[in-house]
Amino acid sequence: MTKTFEPEKLKQFAKTVFEQYGFNANDSGTIASSLVDADMRGIASHGMQRLGMYVRKLNHGDILPDRHGTILKETASSVLIDGEHGMGQLIASQATHLAITKASQTGISVVSVRNSNHFGAAATMFAK
Image (cartoon, rainbow, N blue to C red; front, side, top):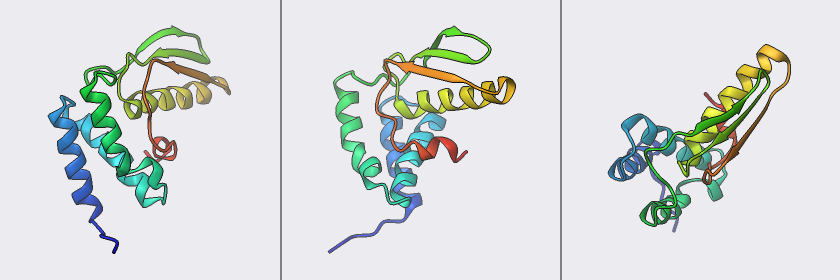
């Protein structure tokens, strides 16, 4: 038997979990939304089922909640970001917005990220 949950209740649950690990309310909401949005798009492999993996990585220090990435190199059309072992959704969101901004200014952009974590379903990066 399949159990169905209301998306907003799932988001609130995941947000609370991430807040307990030291993420601020905004970051927790971003991560929680990415998980539930993936499920709502039919991408269960990148949805709420990833919560357990993130918790394990947080417990082992593989994900650091207070990291948002540092720009190491930047040109008019490119950026290299060190993710500082932060949460993938947060780093990927930053990288996506930088790529879009640079491409709109120069016609092309390349953004690379290193030392980050799993960022979920890429489609959620473009939804905002």
